[in-house]
Amino acid sequence: MNSTKNDPFSLFINFVTRDAAWRDAQKELEAQERHLALLYEEERDKHAALTAFKESVQALFKIMHNYELEAKVMRERMAEARRKLEFVESPREYTALHKELDELAVREKTTEELLFTTWQEHEVRQGQYADHVKGHELWLKDYEQRIQDAQRIQKNLTQKVTSLEQERAEFEKSVPADFLDTYYDMKRSVVDPVVPVINNYCSSCRCLVAQQDLAVMRRHVLVKCKECYRVLYVCQ
Ligand SMILES: [Zn+2]
Image (tube, rainbow, N blue to C red; front, side, top):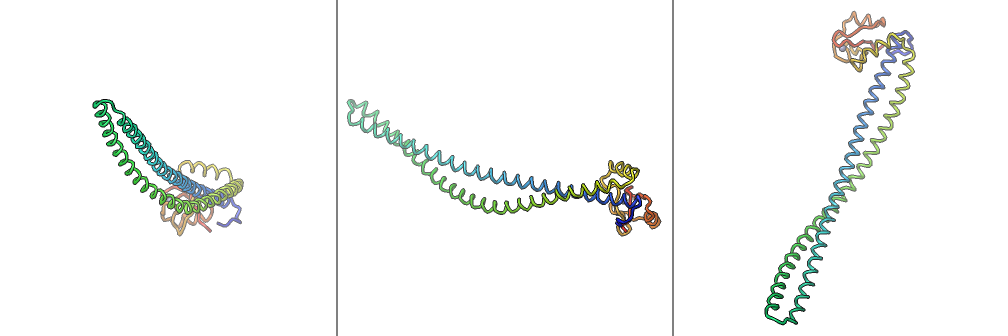
């Protein structure tokens, strides 16, 4: 667009192109913000998964510790029963103590077995957790780079949007009110009511523009596309 021209139509088109650039930059910024939100979500998920894994290993350790305590109590009760055996005074007492000892031995054996399997499971899970931590550290390194890049892009886009908004506002001041009214009125139905003709085609709907319409446009008269009804202009 030749920006040295100061006729109303040229001023209008200058404004429209800035308005479109501002809108495109806003869309780009929104997409970047969505991308960043996904990255933050990824971090939350990864962190939660690692914490859950750690807690499952800790829970297993607690179970193991409880079995250990249980087995210790059994052994103490068995020692106590054996001590009592030395001082039995009746066959009935002797039988009862032996029965108790047998029961305690079975329970202690079961507890020891459970302790052993839990210990094995804990060992495996602990190893898996160590791998998980290593994997997480690698992921974090890559993630930090990605987040830095994404934040830098977001910052640049924010600056771009701000400067385009100021530029657009500056250009808007020079546009005649009736042009602006038409433009904002049309903007209520489409986001881009004024589009350039590129290689004789409407750049929005790809409809071929008639030669006589192109000639009229070159005289800076508002012409609408026959297909999509957008206002057309020719890039010069
Ligand atoms: Zn069109």
